[in-house]
Length: 63
Image (cartoon, one colour):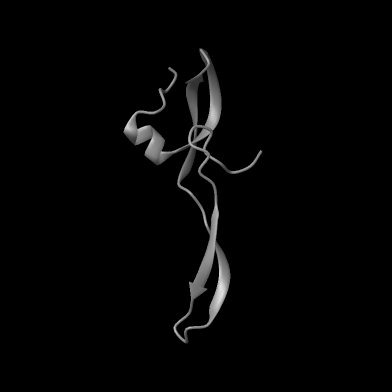
């Protein structure tokens, strides 16, 4: 399974890491995901959800 939010499909993005000498090397910006038990389609499922979706109320946590 890929490291993506199951609600908004936010995933890793690419960029450059800049050193003090300004030499650029490739890096990945990882989203802030957590594995939570959520309600999807009326069922409780464990899924990766980003903190933005949790905070905004786009997802309901299962008990």
